[in-house]
Image (cartoon, rainbow, N blue to C red):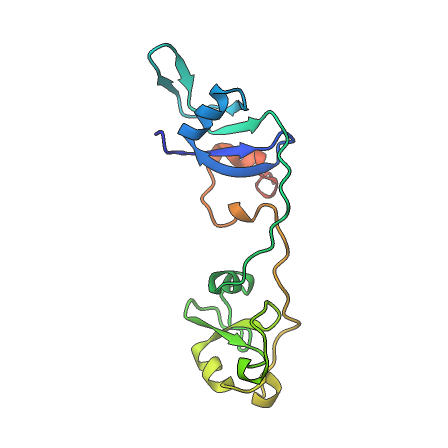
Length: 169
């Protein structure tokens, strides 16, 4: 129970992070956070009962810059929704393809890397899409900066829904 996830909100109720119950109890104990949701009961200490939080809010505002997403295989596949951009087939068996091949001066950047299935990647080989007779659905761009990206692929607890904007519908 002490390692269960707890949603941490900024002073303005914007979701910041997920921490453990242990960390949340420490933050509440030193006066840096306040309890918003208690959905799990209480912990018995030698001198008192401490509620087990599921959502806490910091008492001060934390300014965090929006982080650009790092270029990695997983992030490219997520940006492209695990779809081959050449044939449109959804699959988990994907490879990275450089639109302009690296040996011809193509950079390893968001704009030059796409998801491709194995057969399309072999068919394109070391050519540009135009030379191989293949087409991309549009301009390839880096993913948009999303302050909530840390929550997109994590399981969310039931009591968190009213604090996370896209879950409140």
